[in-house]
Image 1 (tube, one colour):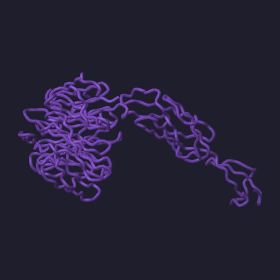
Image 2 (cartoon, rainbow, N blue to C red):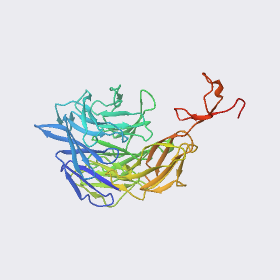
Image 3 (spheres, rainbow, N blue to C red):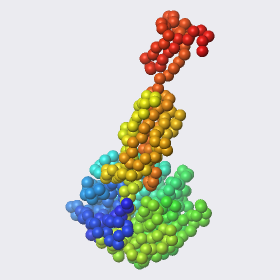
Image 4 (cartoon, helix red, strand yellow):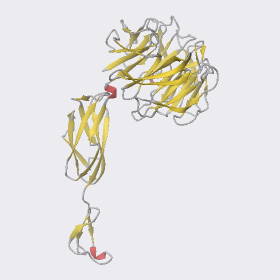
Length: 463
């Protein structure tokens, strides 16, 4: 089940509901103006970033919301400045997240620094700031947009005022920045990690940066129709690598769609969502619907991505929505195997119990599970064919010695796999001419060595 979440800084609220409903009837009041939202892998926790006035000065602020009971599990004061996007890890084992923080927004200049704050998210419910931050100098209007490439494990952040994009390894130092023009704002990464998309606010253009070379090469600026904005711009990428561009300019109610069919010449289409002050769009996990917050209308417009036609009825939100995210319970499920490591003798079946849990830990029954092995010569799996529904029990049996793995995979979306390692401890038979042993032949006609192998006394010339 998908859930649409919207941040509304005009009313300091998080709203949510089904994407199929015309209203987001659920509301959580935040203690600050949240502007951006990200969902942690596993789909359970939302990271909402924005600004809170503390002792008369704006502070970058972050709240963590548990999507299971919709409570705030942690709040972080990240210091003086304005918090922008949060770049989150790409896998369940990621240990870091990053928040872009600017010294200035609009006509307000704080006493803070342009920087990227580093968060330890080993426990995603209670992140901890890791000091020092990545300090980025330059003019006041600095870093509000950030994106993390999972392919090359590099974080990119745009410095609007100085027309540069900085990048760094999550555990390294800042690299030589990429020089652009026209005040870069929004960033996005292609699905294959080879292209960085950059939106330029002054000329309303989309730039492709080639990441396959070092240093990266800045490509042509593609001027977008209805997008000469001189305002904040936002980007989203769908599974087909189509790029969706929106902007906050009042009266600019168009979504520009940029694509390169089969790697050919770029194509640009415009979709009129008839809104004003558009925010950060988001694509649902299935890649079928685009959600666009309309800040002036206090709602979210929907676009059918198969036809690029807007839905007739938007989804009502709260005041001045700026960012949306679609959390998928299906995308956050996990397969749990007990035991997750097996040590077994030959011809002695061992039971492995397989269960599927949703992000909140609730067990999902009736999910199809397919069991396969990387070494069918070593290990057999029953039943045959090896498919059962959860909660499922499979028998794993060793046929000969050695190591093998068994993969337990969901047969439906999101096709999650859990691997169980198998150590087969089978007896090994060696034939020796025992008369050749130092110290003379061993007594008897057979026995066992300490390593579990056995010996048999064979006369010279015997078989």
